[in-house]
Amino acid sequence: HTPEAACMAKCGFFGRLQRPAPADGAPVAIWRLGAGDLEGIVREGLTSVLERSFVAHLEDLLQSGRAASQRRTCVVRCRLVLDAQGMSVGLIIKRRNLVKRLLALGKAYFPEVNASVTVVRAPKMMAQIWTMVEPFLTPVMRAKVCILGDDFEAGLGAHSGLELSALPAFLGGQASDGDICAAMPVPKGAGVALRSAIKAGA
Image (cartoon, rainbow, N blue to C red):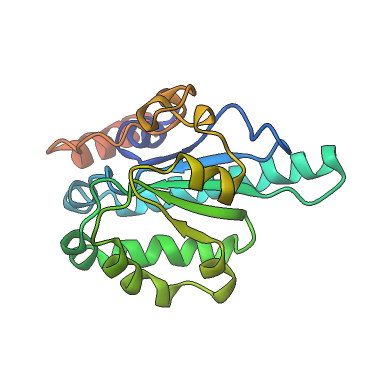
């Protein structure tokens, strides 16, 4: 692991589950946007590191989908589950540039990665958050989104074809939490420490 990868394993908030979707072998991605310390990432100057890690994650999903498509001899795309617990209107407004940048990366580089985007554990103000995010999505992307609250098992199955057991333990499933970046708070000095580690290894 590079120093950047080690940093993002702790502070990132996305990942692909080791076990694919049982129905068609599609990759399953989990994003913990509500748990991600966007404030700390910006404070420590880690935005570019996050963006590179996010692009690598999207590329991994794309390649995993292609491999599954070849095995199945039909198009197989990722099932994305976005855990919205902890998301707030204030944070989205304050860090809208970073959120817009991540959405733009997904839209520009990999518009057809995902078959479905299921938002779970959405807070009550999610409708307000959605109106802020929706303009940055294409019509195709918007059509793939389903927003669910805390009781999401039935909706998850209907929208994505995934059973609750396929999800990580923190979402009530049986997959390992370790498949996903830990979404830990970014400690003060993390940016300086990372840059020093990169310089030392150069």
